[in-house]
Length: 338
Ligand SMILES: Cc1cc2nc3c(=O)[nH]c(=O)nc-3n(C[C@H](O)[C@H](O)[C@H](O)COP(=O)(O)OP(=O)(O)OC[C@H]3O[C@@H](n4cnc5c(N)ncnc54)[C@H](O)[C@@H]3O)c2cc1C
Ligand code: SF4
Image (cartoon, rainbow, N blue to C red; front, top):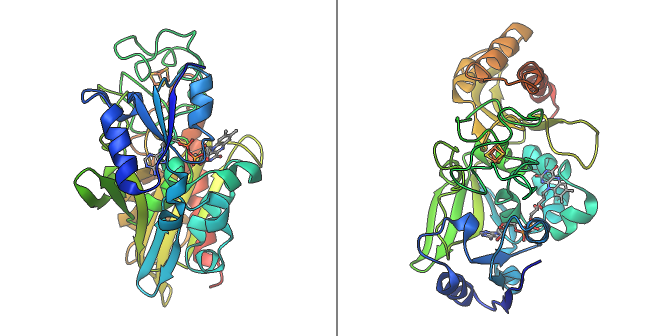
């Protein structure tokens, strides 16, 4: 591990200032010389692997009192970015009115990790592409821009089939982000100019020609909260993985429905484990609206969700698997008792 300075930020201004001061203006956030530390369950791993090489760490845990509230209200939900994954997953009102959020968190990582890890750190986690995480591989456009991509012709069983580019096919690994994107979440960002908000869908970037730039956050900016409009008691997070615990998704679906009198009034479909960024399947959603559910509709929706998918040598199975996950999650959402 390389030497770095450590600073505890006791208020948001101090955190923003410390991060901005150390950041080189032309660096993408992910290569920034200063990085915030929340639970540390990803950042410290990547520093030990020498993938991330910050020279300054700004510990934001002292901000937890202000930034970890779980606030369900009559018109929506607000979650502080420093709330722990386990606390949100176990919250009775989240389980009742946002089961897709509770389950996306409960099915992630392990109990010990969820007790340490925060919501902000979770959405900012980086790909688990093994070539990215192993610095002995030179060819990784995400870690080493312009060097090529070892995964294209390498072992790509875990890689993405949606949102890929000829520069990078790495999967976005998180679960919670699929629930956020499906529910039209808004992310609150604290930076030098104060606080701004944007749609969560605008936070992550597809790899395109610059896979090293993963989000639209600027150096010095911090996620302070997420808010979700409305309530979604009829919602499901279904995750298929190689083992039933402590494993990333091969394919997952975040589904939220508003069903009245047997007719689907509103529908949300997020996909995980299959795409380079948190993924919303809007064409698939459109097929559901105004319809009564049956198996044939579920199949059409699943086909639409993967219409643009592109498989490679080892990961084509994700297209068939992903369709089954979507169809089954829809069935579960329609039949669940609320
Ligand atoms: C073995 C293992 C299995 C896992 N399995 C899963 C899984 O199945 N599903 C899943 O979703 N996750 C999984 N994870 C990932 C885990 O959930 C993340 O490590 C965790 O959520 C990160 O949160 P943290 O608070 O520890 O973040 P940190 O490690 O502290 O930070 C992560 C990154 O986010 C940045 N950051 C932190 N907070 C903020 C903020 N407020 N604003 C801006 N940037 C910020 C940090 O600078 C860093 O770059 C797994 C991790 C491990 C080690
Ligand atoms: S898929 Fe992306 S992260 Fe993985 S080796 Fe290729 S460029 Fe690097």
